[in-house]
Length: 163
Image (tube, rainbow, N blue to C red):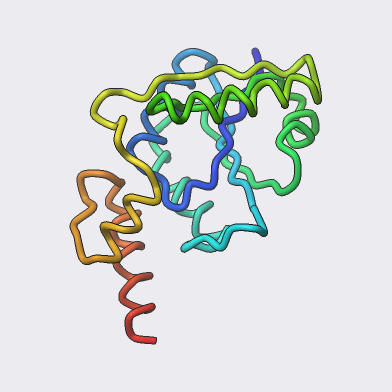
């Protein structure tokens, strides 16, 4: 069985992420959701909050594990003895960036393949950035994220507003 990694910031996880994860598991049988810690980006959620969110949001999906990493993705993939990276594509703009990253990763390690999964139509417009913006402006995000994520967004943003 191939070991497969789906990396992302998942800040927060959306139904689009979960859709790609479910479909990747149905193809490969297993999947590690790998939360990247990027010191250049200040996320809304802590690394531990994102781990907890992903565990809660994927608890009913067999074959999924959660991990974290910092540094180069190819190094994390090698350390985990994986050879496939899964990436979700929503639009042409995603493809350009993801194609460039896949080719760069292949140059760094030719044994690692990147598999692109198109997002399902109903999730093709979703992004974590848009979810955070909607929630920040008081909008209802229940149609876009699992209930545990919507609740955490409300708590996090109401605490920020009290500060």
